[in-house]
Image (cartoon, rainbow, N blue to C red; front, side):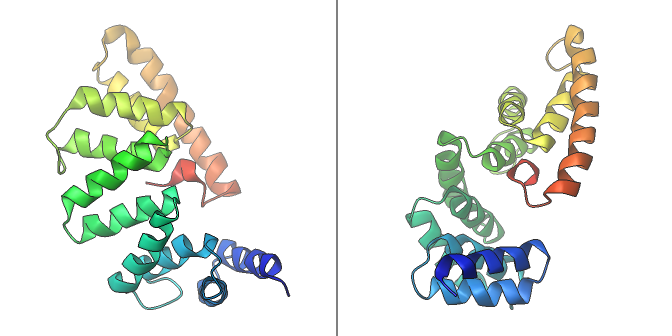
Length: 188
């Protein structure tokens, strides 16, 4: 079996929630330098799915992914640093991802601005980031932006548009989650 076939087999196991099998195959591939596996291994170690949870191993693999330019790797490394209470590193990684329009990072930073998490509360910035994530197809970003509009945060005339975005996001959520539960448009 060649590398591409093994990677497809690992992806199939992952998509079928056979995490132990997927982890084993991705690990095998990463040991021969197959960079596409670095983020996935980091995610497995971060979540403890398919293997024992290990922040040390997660950081190792996500750092390798990040250094190779993988935006998803950078995003998950930011999540790891969040869990380790390293806000400066979180913001630096999210900013880098946002500059490359990685939508889960745009959405996550919007949440930070809305809730005053490691940044000062800035509802205008949060609304702008939710709108931006929505424009790039993030379903939860559309939902949150709709709720901002419903609350009148962008003027009373935008409340009906807010209801439209909110309801549309619910339909998109049902449709996308049933088709591709691992889609970037669902990642938070």
